Amino acid sequence: MPESQSPDQREYGLILQQAGKPQQVLVKFVMLLLNYRYGLDIIVADNMVEAFSIVQKNKERIRCTVVIQNKRFDTTKQLCWLSLDDTIPLFLLLPAPLLPVQKETCQRMKNVAFCAWETAFSQKKIPCTKPSTRSFPNTASAISFRKWNSIPTPN
Image 1 (cartoon, one colour):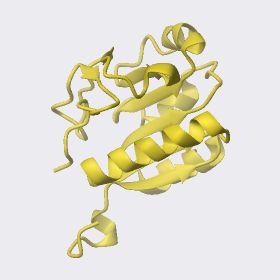
Image 2 (image 1 turned 30 degrees about the vertical axis):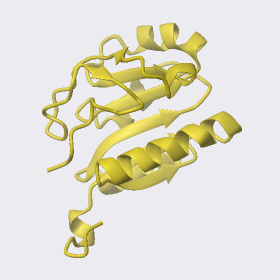
Image 3 (image 1 turned 45 degrees about the vertical axis):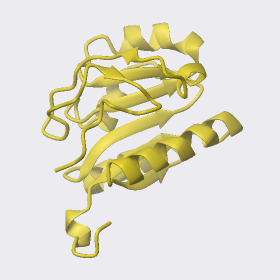
């Protein structure tokens, strides 16, 4: 955070993580990317209740939410909470076998992107829906988690 920026002006990236070795590697990578490349301060939550509380407390300053876990969401209700009712980008990093079912669950959400753990560090671009939000108005239509080109630098 720049010295001149007050706590009220901070912009955050929220990471909802699940404990486990693969998840920790991805969490560290995403933290570095969001902080160093995009200048976002990072808030990490270990469970849905904590994440929801953080979203409610900081909703005007959260610019994106990244979920890293090995289980899928059965309904979109929790995902809508995490994405402020589909107004900020939501990135789901899940094991590849879970992606088809999770995509089906999220088919009505327009501001969600998916990535398999197995390809998160590859050069391959993963197609996603182009988010249209106040937070990231110039978002690209594909994510490369190596370069994470889909998240423009915050204003």
